[in-house]
Length: 196
Image (cartoon, rainbow, N blue to C red; front, side):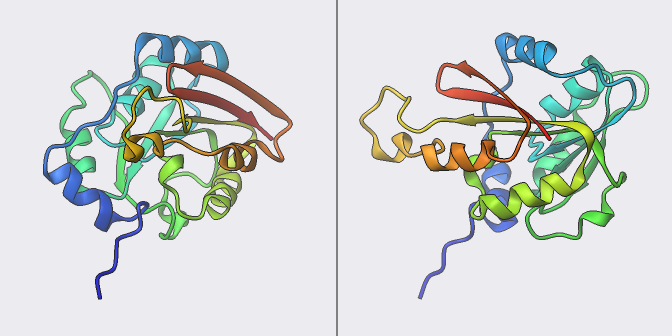
């Protein structure tokens, strides 16, 4: 009997990073939306879940002024991110952590003014549990920034690619229970700004 690794697990992601697979980088339009919808960091803590090669983590830290921690379940992704922080001065903190399963008290801060999750939410097997864990870490008045693909937006006939985005039900679960919900579309992606 063959078992398939959870798409939220290190067993799923580590081989992809080891094989050299890389993922879509934030474009200028996405950075512009972040500048419009996110407060300046002013040294407050931020957590980037599924930080991958660290591009967004570094932008939050050096560009927006947060004291940022990037976490990823893949040791290879964390090593790649740490190796590419060439900016002068203190850089982001990096931690190999399976956000869905690990003890979150190992994080450097008990709460975060900003939590980001870029191209990761879609892969969470138990989205409700994931969001509950995020809510427990979000500081009062904090912001959750999620960027995810929306199902059915790709112009392709490949069923494997058509199913990459979140469904309407996933989007409803994501946006339920927040006092502030802003969305902005970028081609196949949607950016969500969520506040308690």
